[in-house]
Structures are given as structure tokens and as C-alpha cells.
Length: 109
Image 1 (cartoon, rainbow, N blue to C red):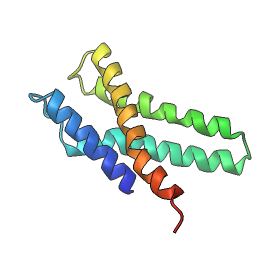
Image 2 (image 1 turned 135 degrees about the vertical axis):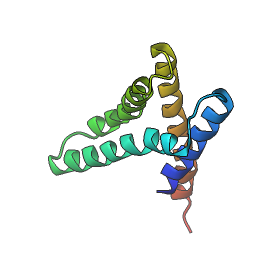
Image 3 (image 1 turned 180 degrees about the vertical axis):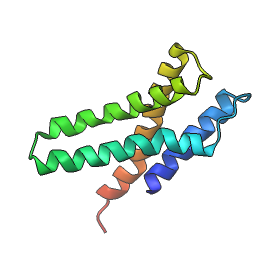
């Protein structure tokens, strides 16, 4: 949950800096991060239950590009090109927010 909170904060900060005149709030940034995270979680459970390849689990990260694109496009605030670019930015910020937790997980006490 901390990773989702950090990713949502980073996405919110990005949109506050980049799109000052839009009404993009914290709940919108949480939606862009939480909806794909839930799909990745449910997909991970299904992949483990059916004992599928770990490669397929890695492909579930595509949800972090597809879902924000759909949400941003349905908001009718951004063009298709801008929605696609911003969905890749959301993906990058989510991956960036996982780094501190991955590093902390590698440290042995």
C-alpha cells in the first residue's frame, strides 16, 4: 500500500506541474494507480493458481499503460496522443516508485 501511495503522490505531482489548469486531483491520480494495481494483483493470483509462466506475470505490467490511457481518454480532457504519452509517464512513475521498496527488500538485517 505504501508503494501505491508513493506512486499516486508522484503521479499527482506530475499532473500538478504539467497540467496546472486541469482539475486533476489526488483521487484521479489514485485511480490511475490503484485500478491497474488491483488488476495486476488479481492476475497474479490467477497465474499462480493455474501455475502459468512467470513471463506472463511480467506482462501484467501492461495494465499500468492500458488502464491510465482509457481513464485519461474517457475524461475528455486530453487528446489521444497526450493520453498515450501520459499513460507511459504513469507507467514510468509507478516503476520508479517500486525501486525504493525493491532496494529495501534486498537489505538483510
